[in-house]
Image 1 (cartoon, one colour):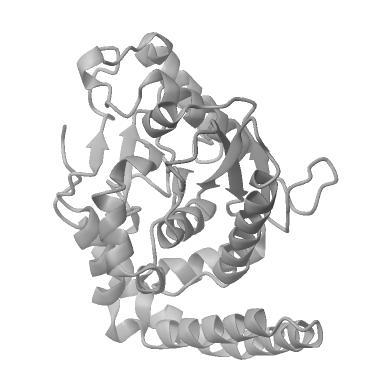
Image 2 (cartoon, one colour; image 1 turned 180 degrees about the horizontal axis):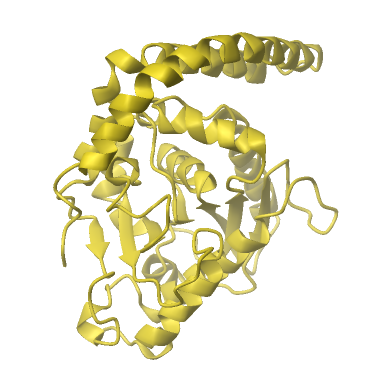
Length: 350
């Protein structure tokens, strides 16, 4: 299986160097305006007795401001961290240039159990693309851009392991029911701002709210599991695009499973927030529990163009079996087309 590309493309270097100076200059008046927005938001959070969220908002603003202003002097810093975690990484599998109908080219992760879970996650990820607010159709928590959905199936501990689901309580005899915690990708102008913060080495300012949301869901899971006898819930964080970067980072930080699609890479601040030890564990001991499905031709996640933006976890780079123009958004269609082409429904593994 080929490793990831072993160099940064020339166009990537040109983009980073040429774009750094004007972006840093333009960012100064933009950040002054944004400072007013952040201050108003922080005052609202403080008035609502949400001091931690207010502190996180101000911290993200300050770090992102420094990142943009100092960008011309630290171009190398937002290229090198992701690059050294992806280049020649054993956690990268490129299927874009192989015959997917040949069974030997099917990664061992694509066993029938995991394929079913990935398919459910792909459908869920696409369903939350336009999800913006709370819903009364579920008893699980929800917020702007994030919601939950449980699978209508239980797994034994062995099946859960095959499906790439971390079992937080392996001694618990109850079957496992996966609960997807979905994080929406880029949809609005403000989401684009979050992407730019992450892209140039900062930390998306909605990281802290999503992180708090996942913690809230985990507490809800604990409460519900205490009253259940037939099965127990186990969280799996799902995300697409910018939501994939947030989902994978939070999952690694909290030690829970993640399934992401066409994910953006991690900015420097996200690397620092997660920490080397947690990332090292995710890439070794827990490597089978974090998977990113990337598709050839995706303008965000194709490593031939954005090598430094790849998720530093287990990424499987699939061919575009549909040749869709909107391939970045239509992950469900491209995933299902790949499954048909590769005949994954009939795959058997020992």
